[in-house]
Amino acid sequence: MKPWSSLLLVLFWLSSPAVADEIRTDPVAENMLLLQTASGGWSKHFDGKAVDYERSYPPAEIDALKSADRHDGATIDNKATTREIRYLADAYRKTGNSAYLEASRRGVTYLLAAQYANGGWPQYYPDRSLYRHQITFNDDAMVRVLDLLQDVAEGRGALSVLMSEFGLRAQQAIARGIDCILATQVRIDGKPTIWAAQYDETTLQPAKARTYELPSLAVAESVGVMRYLMRQPRPTPALIHAVDAAAQWLDLHRLPDAAMRKVEAPGEETGRDVLIQAQPGASLWARFYDLRRQQPMFVNRQGQQVARFADIPNERRVGYAWYGVWPEKLLSQDLPRWRKSIAPSPAHDAP
Image (cartoon, rainbow, N blue to C red; front, side):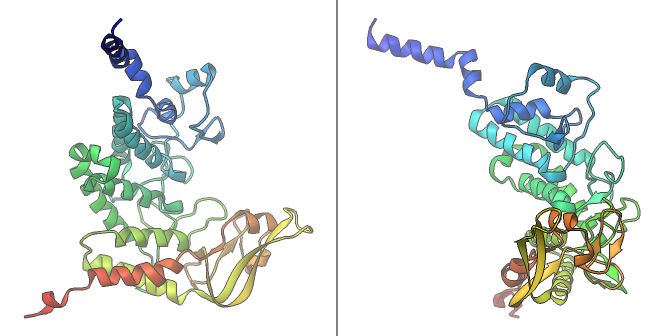
């Protein structure tokens, strides 16, 4: 056989459907197709454990996932659904596998369907049990959805493939989402502060989630909300005022000259502990502040507010982020840069 004949045979073999399909698959993306729920979203758990897209699923588990009566635990918590949409869109760009594009399309459709008319997103949809129906900023859940939709609307990266179909609807969802953010900024004595971690979807009042997550002002989540608002290319006066008011509150409620330290503690039940110590020049914030005195708030597993951080049982002290430095870079670097970027230019002010 002549050399060019061998080359033609190789090219023919590579272009055959079976080989092309094999080349165009991605193991992680294939598992994402398998675990996508009937509603189009994804759960953060499978069989009681965190979803693992790296492992192989045996036939019995595949049958369970394909079962018509499988519980639809789709959620936006712990990066679920937004993570998969992003990965699948990128996998489609790399492989051309249309199944990945279709799954990402279903995911965006799910996010749009899950949004409340007032602009908020529940932590879970369609499951509304317990606190899953509440509008959820906790762990940046709603902000992560808005970020993804804005990437779709702006045609950014791999998500640009979804822009023609979803761009306009994404823009409309973003506008409602920002309206919800502005409406839920907590006001105390008429003055805007920051945001709570979750809200009643009807009254838009701060709401309780887990027993130790009482209605409160939530610092970590508020930083995520502010960053999203600061992303907007044409911020309105209301948006700018919301960010400025939140920044003022965060600056006023920093714990100066304080730092958190994790230490070995053989005498404690976990063998570890968290200490708050004096450190000149450092800053620290509590994760939660109460809605009345706007002071650091600590809660045990029984849902009882305790007076001091040291009064929380050791397991809760080390097992939850009660203190952090979430606003530090935002206040010192990002906010000044943002204010400069939105300031009118001298030429604009000139008559």
